[in-house]
Image 1 (tube, rainbow, N blue to C red):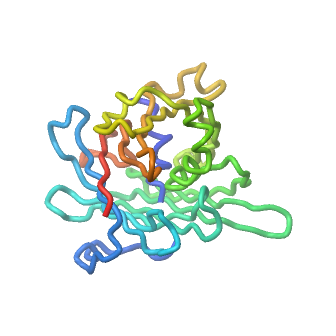
Image 2 (cartoon, rainbow, N blue to C red; image 1 turned 45 degrees about the horizontal axis):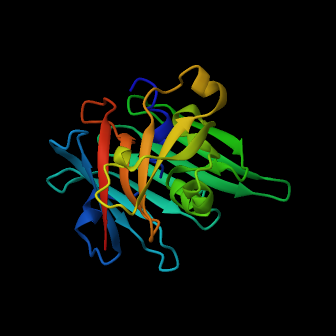
Length: 250
């Protein structure tokens, strides 16, 4: 688990204004899905992700509340796909510590850029960097539309490359996404398509991260059903952890 942590801080990944913790008690008419994060052996529920789809034109999450089993909110993120679906603008905040992530999609007459801001859970320093945008760049929740965009290639067994934003590095890393056996996704349905995420190129040679990440999608809806790997949220002791997340849609 020692090196996988930075890659999926991108899945926090996570415009707008930071949401207050009390927002969890408001009308949940836009509740779209709930992801239950289990310990890898399913012995304990660690937290739940409440996904809201507040744009009727999108079949995508626009806001997430991370809640403890008792229902209290400990982290939130807002997602804006208006500039790009695969590289959305996000804002993430963890109320337990100083961790926050912001991305902003910038366009001018010459090129498009992504401004990335990051503050670690154990730091009072907020860092920013400008990155050049390209079609292969994927930011946080933009991974979901990225999978849908390349669905036919993936289910045919082809490997698809992406440049995944890693906020803690203020940079992207090259990854490969390929189809794999469904048992890795702990899928309860034969309609689950399971994919594995691994580093590409030299990152793979030097073992930049050890454990692969598995994501399972329902065949017809092409919605994420299972996430099996390093969590984008640390535990209450600020330690990274592996989770098995199952999603229910409404």
